[in-house]
Length: 72
Image (cartoon, rainbow, N blue to C red):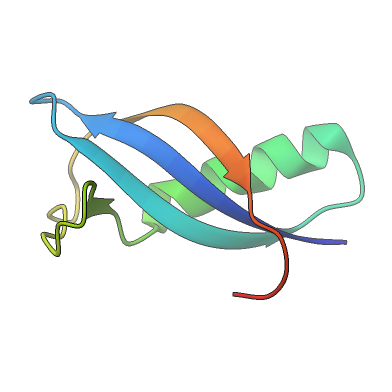
């Protein structure tokens, strides 16, 4: 099953950010594992309408996950 997710996180310097990802999973544990892997390579951007992108390789702590409805 395909899941479209929005990850909300914070960089090591405290800047809030988010990333949209899609993962395929058949169980809760597989979903968590796939979301973690996808979050490590996702294109993260700043929040609040910001078009600022988080530099690749930045340390990000995922704080919450939102399931997106419909197609991306």
